[in-house]
Amino acid sequence: MADHEEYYEPDILSVSDENGNEILFELLERYETDEDVYVAITRYYETDEEIIDGDYEVIILKVENDNGEEYLAEIEDELEYEQVSDILMAKVEEKFEVEYFEPEQ
Image (cartoon, rainbow, N blue to C red; front, side, top):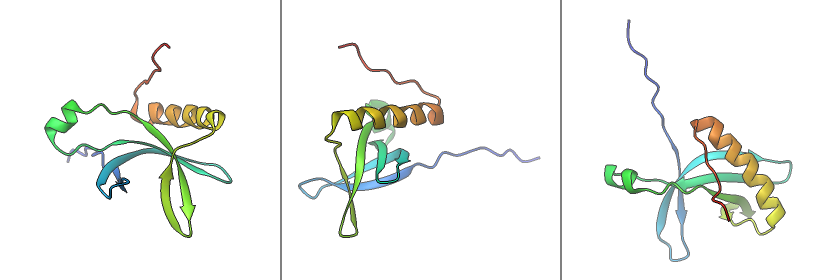
């Protein structure tokens, strides 16, 4: 009988910063409403050293569309951000069986 192992294959997003530099992010989770699309991403690390030293900060962004061109944008509205962030982080925690917490302020 053959062993069937599950291999995790991340969804990689290539994002260009304001200077045109390409940065790779891993798409952790996506959330859609009737009007908007939101994503939870983290920096993608390729080498063993980068993986060990990575901070794995989760970034919550909104997918915007400008004449058919999609781009990621910060969520300006604080209430919208809090609502979307709670939903996406719960999905990430469930999917990856991890627990994130917010530091005390």
